[in-house]
Amino acid sequence: TEILDIEKIRADFPILDQSINGKKLVYFDNAATTQKPTAVIEAIAHYYNFDNANIHRGIHTLAERATRDFEASREAVRDFLGASSTEEIIFTSGTTQGINLVASTFGRKFIKEGDEIIVSGMEHHSNIVPWQMLCEEKGAILKVIPVTDLGELDLDAYEKLLSEKVKLVTLNHVSNSLGTINPVKQIIAMAHEYGAKVLIDGAQATSHFKIDVQDLDADFYAFSAHKLYGPTGMGALYGKKDLLNAMPPYMGGGEMIKEVSFEKTTYNELPYKFEAGTPNIADVVALKTALAYSDSLGRENIAAYEDMLLAYATEKLSEIQGLRIIGQAEKKVSVVSFVIDGIHHQDIGVLLDNQGIAVRTGHHCTQPLMKRFNLLGTSRASFAVYNTTEEIDRLVAGLHRVRKMLL
Ligand code: PMP
Image (cartoon, rainbow, N blue to C red; front, side, top):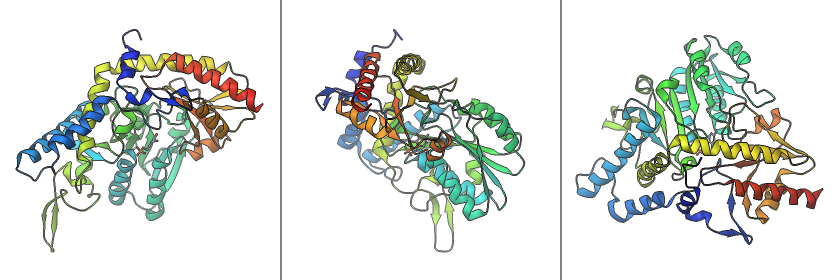
């Protein structure tokens, strides 16, 4: 943790240098979205200032430049995920679209009446609802891996759910509400023994540690750029080539076709088959800059620093009377969800904001998980590489004030 110069890193994020309600901003809502370094903001501006053109079809210089940078970003994502080919990298509007793409196309082709889909009990709504919609349409059955009191998945129960009827297992690598790191490599291997495919929702994982889709043997892996210092409204889906080739297209339109006539249309090759229409070129280009930014800090360094923040916050928050941390898994990223006896999470959020401290409160788009813990919501502090122990001290002091005001 000595390796990273946090003051220097903070200077890369201009948004952090401001006051909220007369207090220096403490931004602890990183699991919702991280802030963007100047390099990323400038990459977007540079694209529009110098290179903007539609991609792939143009032969003029700007179109060539835009295409080159767009495809360079695909190569950067391939490298980032450890995929073997850029054909396996599909740009999306984010994790949500990646999951919906798989539900719509893999689902349309391979899920039949009576088939089973397994999700985990700690999924974001975006990895529940698309499967419910598919199951309803197909007459398939949704099964759920239960969550233990510590906020880990019950793997014995998972094993019992597996059978030849299961066609897909889909779960998050890291829980956005609890911070739990799920043992996805093992979960994938177990599913594969029954011939089921596995989709990993990597929305909360990619900013915290190195991903290697080949080592995990994931069939699909979805993530969002905005959770790892990149722009909002874009992300990528990795899929194994054979599977992607076997799946029908997602949206119909330009770019995804080879030849169109009113009699018959043939589809483009991977990955373009799944990329209809003019994409979010500027933000795709800027994602490469975001990946380069975290790479320049070193992913291991980021992970080690965030682990230190997590340990510090867990210790300091635990000392607050009546505070209970929800999610005490052995393996966690830097997310602390908590409740305080007798105080509504909404009040905590408002009173912390009054002191310039941004946390997320509510169900975090995981209502079934909240129900599992008999809660309507929690307060969640989630840390990124630019956060500090001094800021955690501010949170702790802020919560003492909240208790004094309300109890
Ligand atoms: N899954 C998880 C675990 C998430 O945390 C989020 C974002 N909160 C999503 C999926 C959805 O990501 P997006 O809104 O960027 O599509």
